[in-house]
Image (cartoon, rainbow, N blue to C red; front, side):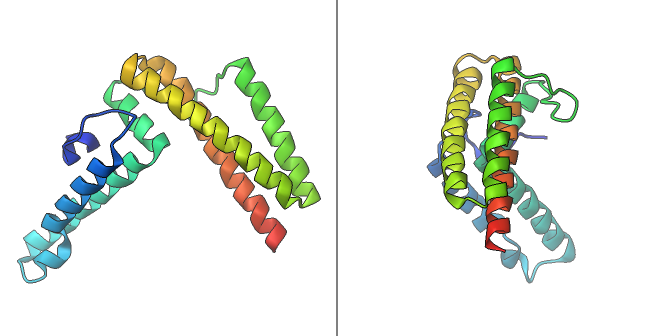
Length: 172
């Protein structure tokens, strides 16, 4: 099975040329979209649907930094093991605790400004981790070290979802 990168004809890498990805996606969709096969036989329509589903999933994965990094690591034989490998550097664990405490305090106080500040800090952390991922994957080819960074990024994404839920609780 070809990688998502191969499907779109782009070089595998964390630092992605989004313009090239978008162009390739639109070009492929123009050729395989089910509307083009409305009057075709059942087998052709089914194949079009299957290809459309595959292309949409590949595009979704490559657009998302976390999923793109996981895909790259899988291509290089590394299982991120979100569920089973929770070992993280002590510095990151301390940062996690601080962020969670801040979220809890802001949620309890129903303080949208504190949530805004937390989300801004989180954006900085995510950018830092994404920059490190690009270095580990694209330049250093250190996929094992990148796996730890992917787990960090997963935590940051989860925390962002929890911040979103805290906003919704304030608005309710």
